[in-house]
Image 1 (tube, rainbow, N blue to C red):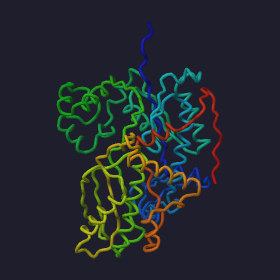
Image 2 (image 1 turned 30 degrees about the horizontal axis):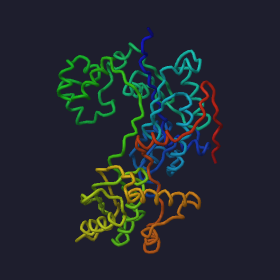
Image 3 (image 1 turned 60 degrees about the vertical axis):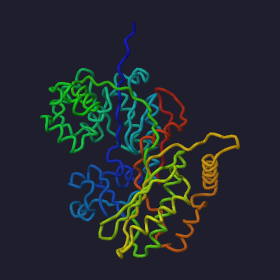
Length: 440
């Protein structure tokens, strides 16, 4: 009888992704130190740097002026987030041709089921097939990637980290414990400083230290996480990769105004406009919220926030905006400083009720259908062809605050999985059907 093979999981990760995207968009930047600047005008802090720039000590979070001081010949570019999203989809489109299952986890990372793929593509080994995929991504999308292959997601990600940039490393079955022996526990996703302190308290500094402890100690102290960590440390953790497609539990927006705003009426219009954008996002996902919070940050970087729980789950802008306005004036009462940033968050989400009743369709269904109709109109006539009353008021009363400031594309795993599920791609195992992407 044929024994069941353990799944082999490949972790794929774009190298210095935002900076690599800028090089892909402008080939003249190839070979130069490139760093991407964030902030309101693209010259605040470094949000990404390629490996040429990192050799000068440029790191994420560094002030752009300091990066230019360290690397005068480096190129500072403003972010182009829409292009990063587009290139991400192009990257995943091609990677998906090499696997029956791809689980994206961020804009530039994903896990692939690679169990039988070398045999399917008639490659001598996994390294040969990964090399083929990496070359295709580099040549056709312009994005260099690193990859790690192992028996679990944790281990595959660590394998990728060990071979960056632009490398590939496979942790073969039976070699897991030796590979992990000297790896610090904080290298693992899910172990921040607080959990690391708890592990150090029982004598754990490396994953190899975990393997020397009795399972019961880890299980009693950390529950399921401790048990998985123990199995990983001993090379016994085996996972089955699957698309979870879990509904979102919270959603929000934190937006820095184009200018520190002393006019609170104008800042409120800006906040209401951002609120309606967030509402549009979760209605698109067939959700409504039980709770909401508003947070304001002022010029001197101090802030204040308040939350509210609705009587019932809400998705109607007229109801939500009334609460946003009430909270806003409560937060600014007695203050005179300009407002620097506005934040609105929704949580405790539940699905829309889309089932018909005796009298036809309910309000949830009608609202969802209205949203779809408005999206169709905007798709037909272009972005900005559909505007809410709040948006029109913002444009007329506070036009200096108008502008679609690019937002960092940190897409939740659930949303990335839905995007992948929407792809309708031909399956031609063993040969590429893609065409090169042309960049301006």
